[in-house]
Image (cartoon, rainbow, N blue to C red; front, side):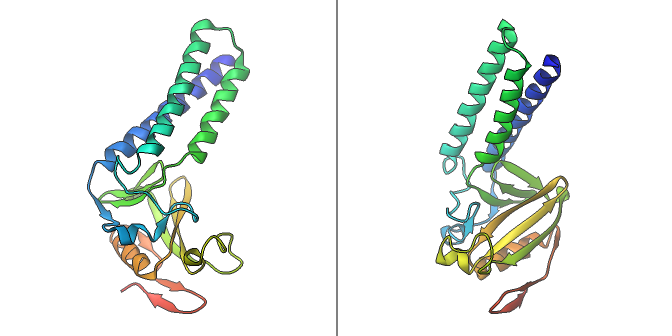
Length: 202
């Protein structure tokens, strides 16, 4: 049992480290959207917070937090492995801690690259994305009420090979530009219905 959980923790650590390294590499590459601060200010990974610049410097605090956490877990794992004084419960604790951190410490990041999309600590290549659609935020939507901008915005939902993810866009102009870029690579729902208007990607 202990060996099994040790392997799970090791695999989770390697996967987490791979994700962070991949994000850093992608951040150093040119992005094709958003290109201006005006566009970036209308995109939100979390509805209450505008995304930070899609650069290593712009994501520095989030990257440092993730690296510090990984160093802490890696140190704990090394101590447990070398001393062999803990039981499988400690490995289980580290595994849940890693899972929690991966989902609760995402970078405040959304950026379109030539070969895919960066969202938080995840890079999705075009070939792994099945479809993209935008849904208007209405009064009964869970994001309604965060701000006046969000109340009239959209949730962009991305379905990929192993699940789905989403982010908020608070401008129809930005949304049109974003979906037009994505449409060159993946299936995009070509019509958005809102309570006040309808538009097609043009």
